[in-house]
Image 1 (cartoon, one colour):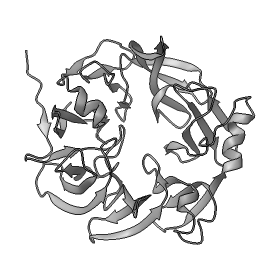
Image 2 (image 1 turned 60 degrees about the horizontal axis):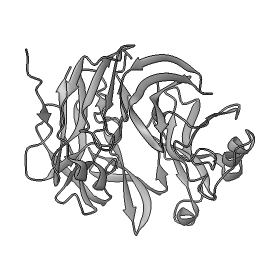
Image 3 (image 1 turned 90 degrees about the vertical axis):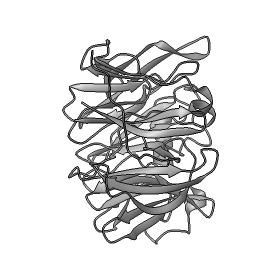
Image 4 (image 1 turned 45 degrees about the vertical axis):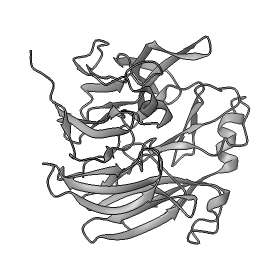
Length: 354
């Protein structure tokens, strides 16, 4: 039996981290990787680094302030540009950085989206961001940045966000418009987002807006850690609550319509998930309290894993320090990247070859 080889992005005394599940860890041409380094997982100080895909030429980019849940969410926008989040003067911001010219392209006060699609990047703006950006950002809501030109387009107001829930008889909350996980469809015709609504206290709701028509969709008590499967459907983990707790054993990865219809099963137990670019393999971590956060890789449609990446049962670093595995496939589908805690004080950004 072959032993599964775990490759570390960097060897050293610091912790290393990748960003959100399904992020663009590699540049589109597959030549570079972006990751984060932390001397102390209990501190906010974080460094952004890049290296070649063969793990040579490691290079420091800059330092930011963030905690460990998704780290600085660093990902590639194009072959020379990365995007990452920061707390600039105590207020959430994100930066687009040219790694070839070694310079900041844009810095925007706002809540960054999940990843770029076709050089478009979604973000949201709240009250504490107003007055800190260009004249194009005048009010709270959702925006799209053209990462090539710097043009910013206003997409959705707070009233329009609230109306997605209200029109379906759901009660909004003061923070309903503070959406998260903004993500454009691969063809950039729709944008989805997680919303907090009073009637869905455990899982929240998953909203979607078709940009040209402004048609809206909503899934109450949504599946979790959603990503676009294609231009019209999602892949996500279906979870169920038992006695007030989310049940790990009944979770599974599935495909859903924008309105919540379950279309097909994609894999078994998971939490943070991703799918290979050709959608033949799916990965999910067993990141649930009381369990080691093992990663499972499934062939499409099978709930039995074809690969199991075993993790140590380190509850402190996983939950108190919020280091989650966040599996993410490479652009060519030949690698799976993930965070691998190795002690309660250290984690290693790692990958396996597929």
